[in-house]
Length: 395
Image (cartoon, rainbow, N blue to C red; front, side):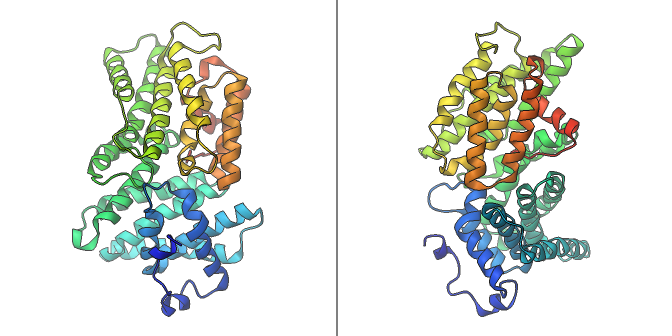
């Protein structure tokens, strides 16, 4: 009932004459309130921004509501194990067409459409991660959101409340950083620029499970790991690359939870270990342990696996697990570690019915079939996606 208390009650009759006039649409709206929002959000405290912020916006914008109902409908069908209903495709099509029409009107100077267009782009990005073989479309919507967000941030406070601004910035930044591996080196410059601009601008506490000080390091870790591997293959790692690598390792290792919130702290520790194994697997050539890992990689696994096992399948933090599981999965060389990661991905798929989780497992299984210690690192995720001609988003 707490979720419903955030929604206008009773619903305005005018809403029922619009996009909620169909019984199926109202069922999808109900499903979003009770199920779908929990798949795409991890809450700090009792306030879920995917209800508190998103639902009121959807109630005042048919465009946003279409995106929300499409998101709920795709998730509903997956969870039920049946085909997507025609009404869901109707809302999806209206959201896509509304985006195209809205962008045209925006170009003509109708700036009041900025926020609905941004929110819908972000919703459509989520929709595509729920669908099979739609990762490339998700990136298309994410790139559109990048352009729109920069314009939205120029709006005066009178047109965009602080909580809504923080939610939009945080959700975009969260999605963008986790998609960096998928987008590849071509995105390095704008992803780093966006990270430097957006994370410091989020003044409020995290509302989407996004540990700001660690998430903003993800692009830098990805870039230096890729560069280190390339320079090592060429025969010489430059001094500035070594300095950047060691600086990042120190910063990540030194992180401690700044919040008393248990979920926030646990999320941070998971991502801390994922970043450390990312750096270690891409650069370390030291003594191998009994499992065939370098000592730094072994230490990261020894810390990560107990953390993973401490998280119950239905914990809200599970919605943030896909990326660290992909990172550790790309480095996993033992049957025990691979099985632990594979089993947790199966659990996530069962509980949340997220296509991106299933796609992540398939990609890791392709890497494990190679069973080559020389490519047991996160850079192989991008390589394997290109090899398989697929686009996987790890969230």
